Picture 1 (cartoon, rainbow, N blue to C red):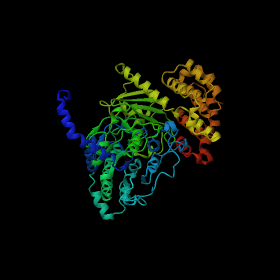
Picture 2: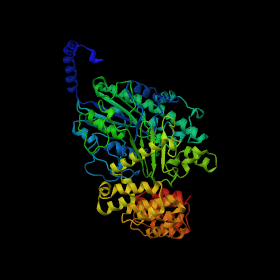
Picture 3: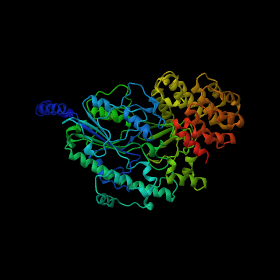
Picture 4: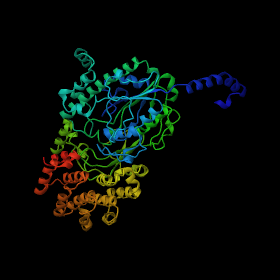
Length: 635
């Protein structure tokens, strides 16, 4: 130990090493800003050999991981593309900005900027491979070039010696690739369009065929042929991704910039089978994340190359890290933490995740993940996970799963997706990586549950979670006043609303809900009605209050009141209210009404006629999801 070394020996050691250390530090300070390249795939969980997947054939990605850093607990903040990318382009959670709902394209506050703009102002050349999908309006100043396909075209206009930030997007593993197995090589050939058909065939010949019999079926999915075939195809798509990644590295090498370039690989969220993408389990939020630093910049890395990093990291943390790598001051409104050297051990113990409206189907879930546990809070537990989403149902595995459930051919773990959910879920990751054994009701985990419940709620309060204000209410006020969603939330008693939502959807009693139903605040009335839905028949003492809300100034409130009323014998009044609500001028109120009608599972003749005409109305052109949900209800 150092205290046993004589003082003269320490002085002699300093004389020998001190100048060398100072020279090394000065050399590091004189380094130019590094290039940064982020390669992002779509919709894939860590289906890689370096993550222990024995069926994966991914030699290029595996080698990259072994020679760099592998992050074992990396997560997207959202389990679907647009909200996920909304996070990573701004450094701010969509629940704060109001962009958490799929394809919402909401306006945001002026200070929220796409993070590459800070790099541009620091002298960087920003180059994007085509895809944006940020769920908020684009900012034209962000990219110097943004329509290229091949890496050699990515640097048109770049000055000699100018540092660059490259965002390379690929659709190779996108969910849509499994919808039609006959076209499995189409995107691959498009990606390698610079090669002759014969050269493309040679690459395809290197893909190891995966048979459905080899496919690992998660316990929450039924073991049926359609599931196995989709999984097998996806493992082949991962091999195609690996070939594309190898070319990406090769083309970067040819630029002569590898010694100056820090490279990051992630997917945009997990996936891609049913109950992965769009859902905030490990299967939907955990992502592969690997990072490589060239020799001259390794002093910035959070760990030596060849290491595994166990800290919980989310997309919120990547953005301040990139800015710090570039020597750019991190804006105060960013919500993540840098994980560079000296910072990695000081990060928050949790990764935060969220789920809002997924295309045409409303839901609201929040989650936090520590190294050991995932806590999930379902704020609409009366809805099943398996609400119909048109694009999701394009996959054969989802249709087959639904058919197996309806035919009584699924076990309890596989059936849970199609049934109402518990308000709270708690999973021990080491024992239950698939999140099928809910520990929330177990007395042995009561203290952990209480702590994580409190911490998750505090995150929602800290982030001023706009999801607790109904989307129709926010949209309507924006149209009327021009106030962005974040400004509207700032005017609400948001902590009171969040705590009311927690109470109303977890363990509500009628007498307490009445105060919410009779509140002067629309969001509180909304959650009071949600609590009445959760109570079901036990909400009968609230019938008078629910009847009054059928004509509420907030259409969202009226929808929820009508659904609750339908469950306690007020079908006639509820259906009359739904008939009026389908004529509402607010498209999100109409969509929520359609969601409630789906949950009720019944359409009278008048409502069926209205739903049939909805797709022809202008409001359905404004919001295409009205068409999608209407078509499903009419099946």
